[in-house]
Every structure is written in C-alpha cells, then in structure tokens.
Image 1 (cartoon, rainbow, N blue to C red):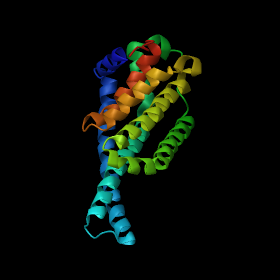
Image 2: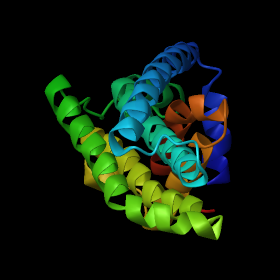
Image 3: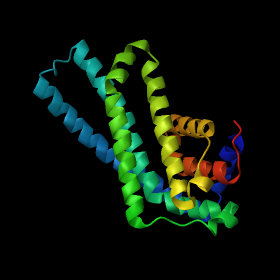
Image 4: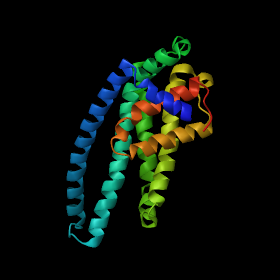
Length: 221
C-alpha cells in the first residue's frame, strides 16, 4: 500500500498526468462552487418552508449539520463524476509510464459503457449515503461517530469504483483488487477528500494507486 502511494505521487511527474491534474482541479473547484451556491439557496428555501429560520439553537444546529453532511456528500459526488470522466486518461498515462506490458493488452471501454458505469456509481454513492443519513444525524451527538460511519461507507464505495474502472479495462482476473487493500485504498481516498486542497488531488492519486496495486501486486499495508 505504501509503495502504491509513493508510486502514485511519482506518477505526477508525467506531463500527461500533470495535464489531467490541472483539468481535475479546475473542474472540481468550478463544480463545487456551483453546487455550493445551489445548496445555499436550497437551505434558505427549506428553512422558510418548515419555518425553522428563527435563529435559535436547533435551527442553527440543523444548519451546521446539513451544511457539513451535504458538503461532504456533494464533494463525494463531484469526485466520483470527475474520476470517471478522466479515469481512462489517467489509466492510459500511468500504464504507459510504468506498465507498458499491461497497457498493450488493456481494452479501453467504450464511451457508452463508461457513462453507464459512471451513472451507476453516482446513483450508488447518493443512494447509500442518503440511506445512511439518519445514522449520520444520530451519530452527530457522539462527536466522531458520523465521521467514522461516513468514512467506512464511502471507503467501501470508492474502493469498488476504482476496482470497477480497472476490471472494465482488464477483466476481473487482471483488474480485481484484494478486499483488504481495496478497503484501505477507499479509506485513504475518502479521508483525503475531507482534507482541504488534498481533496483536489484525490481523483488522480486514488486512481493511480489502484493501478499500482493491481499491476505491481502490492497487497501489503
């Protein structure tokens, strides 16, 4: 796992990866700002509709909870979408740089197949997190319970997404990641999404790590 992480940072030296990184960062910032503006208007409408805009303790607590949870979920959805948009470009560049023997046999999925997998991933992330929303809210009073639950659920989902990208190209026998390394990869990626500035690099670094885990056979932690 550590080797895969170090190699993923080394991948950033490749001009193709650097170009993708710039696109990912710009698109992430623009998308999240747009979603943030939309969320602000939605919250104002919601509080007016339910008459909880009294400035009291409970309305304030509810505002903080909604902003934190929605922000984390929206960023997660933005990251999923952007990762799928640039996944093939990232895989091409990393495999050409480190694993040309695998690049020669990998089959890039069609545009339609990529869109279908991306939509399934986005629906899966939104669905599971919305189902877990009551749990997130309930665990807010524990201090750390919500963060732990969010990390675990989204780590499982992110690990699966990254594995699916490689299976789509190399098949299950050559693209699958062992369960524990896949979970650790998902945890690192999901935790990275919660760190300002680092979260902008997650789509590229997590995808590169998945490639190194599969092709370098790095299943150690």
